[in-house]
Length: 275
Image: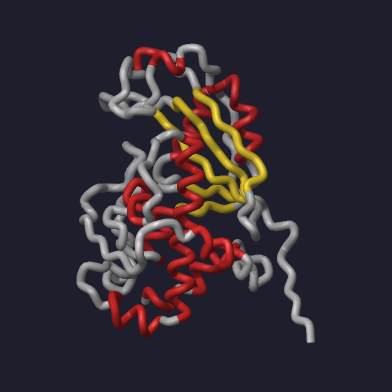
C-alpha cells in the first residue's frame, strides 16, 4: 500500500528580513535605515530561492557614526555612496509585499521601521499576508533555555558562532536558529518522558507553563534587541554543535497537514511539551 500526502502548492513564500538602523540620541529623533537584507524561502522545504541586501544612505549622514564599535559595523564611510531608501524602495517593496514576513523581534522593530521609511517618502508600505516573529514564537514554544533569547544568545546556545549584526548574515542565522529549535522540539516530542525527567523539571528552565503563558517581552520600539532583563539562564539538553544533519532529515517530515506553514506545524506538534 502506498501512502501519499499533498501540500498546498499555492502557499505564500516566507521572507526572512532584517534591518540595521541608527539609534536615536534624543527624544523625537527618527530611526534611519542603514541596511536591508532578506532571503525568500519556500514554505514547505525552506529552500532559499531569492536574496537581496543593500546599504542605504540616510538623508542626514551626520547621524551615522564615523567609527563602529563592532568589527563589521556600518560606518559613515560605508554608506556615503550607497543608494537612498527612495532609490531601493521598489526592490524592497517587491520582496516583502504579499509574502509571510519572518524575523527576530520584527513585530516590535523591523515592521515599524519599514512602515516609517515608506511613509517618509510618501509611498504606501508593503503588506504581509502573515507574520512569524521568532522572538515571540521561540519564547513561547522553546522556553528561555538560551537566556535572554537575543539572536546572539540563541546562536551561542547552538554553537553557531557570533552574530555579525549585518542584515543578510543575520537573517540566514535566524532561519538556522529556528530550524535548530524546531528540531530539538521535534526530538523531544518523540521521548517526552525521558527528556522531562532529565531536565524539564529543572528550576533553571522557564517553560510556557511556568510563565503562565505570558510572554516575558514588553512592547519596545527603541531598539532591535529584546530586553536584557529576562535573566541569563541556560540548560543545554544536547551537546553543542551543529544539528544540521538531523535538521535535514527532519525537514522532510514538516508537511503532514495540508495548508500549514512548516515552521508553525512542527512547533505546534511539540506544543504539548511546554504546557
